[in-house]
Amino acid sequence: MHMDDEQARWSESAENATREALDEFAALPAADFLALKNIDGRFATLSIGNWLAKQARIVDRSTGEEMAFANTDDLIRAGWVID
Image (cartoon, rainbow, N blue to C red; front, side, top):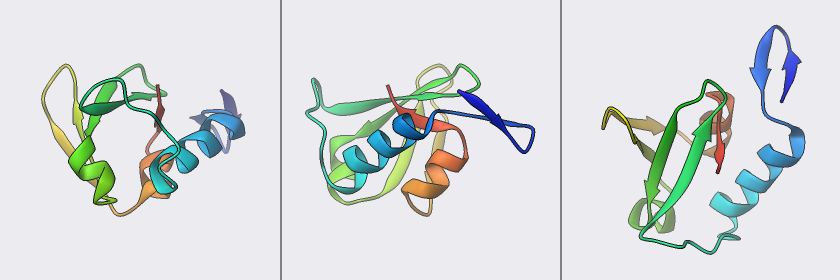
């Protein structure tokens, strides 16, 4: 991770890998979801259904909170990448 405008971010390669996995279906899920991690230490899942529908809607693994993003770039800006 690196600091950019005083906001912690993942490396460019982690962000690009996330874009490829989510937007170009370049991931091979090991379960019925894709695992994500946040720069702040949280973890979440993206269901296969949402992934295939290109809906950036994830669920926090600890709290069960559902978070929706307009697109993959918004999800990445919020600190999420593929785990």
